[in-house]
Length: 354
Image 1 (cartoon, helix red, strand yellow):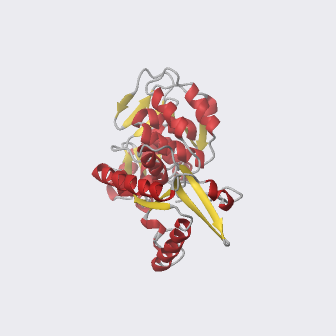
Image 2 (cartoon, rainbow, N blue to C red):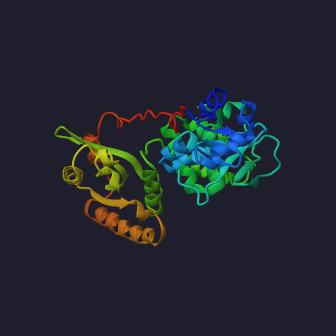
Image 3 (tube, helix red, strand yellow):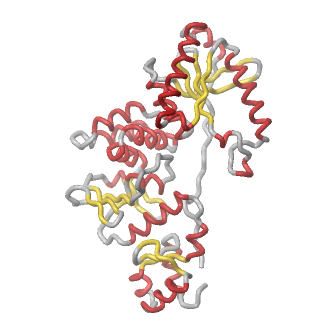
């Protein structure tokens, strides 16, 4: 522990994710020149004006979301009035899967604020909330997952809100939670977007990419796809991301083929994983079905238009060859829904200790 930091300051930092305000440090017995000395020496860094952390701790936070949460927490410590984290700040704190903001800022809900105000990188929001919508995560108050996802929808639009709402449902929120949160927004701005998100949200997607894929396939104009459609035969079961008629849409990411020891999801070599995927596709298409494969880049920009044209062509080809009726597949459906993987996440930030 640094000689200039006394035990009371260390205790304060331990309770605040390694953060301490200048005022708190002085109240705990440090002189102003001691704080300045730690900053000048590089031992402490200013996460936000007047809010400090040990440089070694900040440098240990390698994930962008960790640095974002620390910045949000630092901003929160500078707000004296009662408030809760909201929007993306709440989502990151609760580890919801969300699309990033173009310009990341800290979002807080403030009772009694007239309108929304952006000051020094912090957006203070007017929208009221009930105490039953407030959760505490690692000592920080935030709006719950359902309310957070719908606030993101109002702030950033349908697609951002859909991704957040799907994630909220995956992590334990219910459709009733979304409906209750939406009911209080009857005359709020962008409430029509909120209603669209609530109507479309699904707990069956496993990732942001699958949420984007469901929206993408819906845009083809042939209906809303079914998520997680399973087929079982000969001792083998395969679950497909999305189904429309007799055509499947699989969302591929590099992490599916990357071994766990280098940050991926596969417990096998890339060659073995690719071979298994080839056999899986042969099994699925053996039921007289078609398949399109999509990647992240297919959902954005000019590539989206190209991918839509390709998938429409592939879907219509499947329809021409095999029709759209799936009644013959009923005997091959698994008796139970796809087992859900429960991800038990620890705190978003590692514990700081002196």
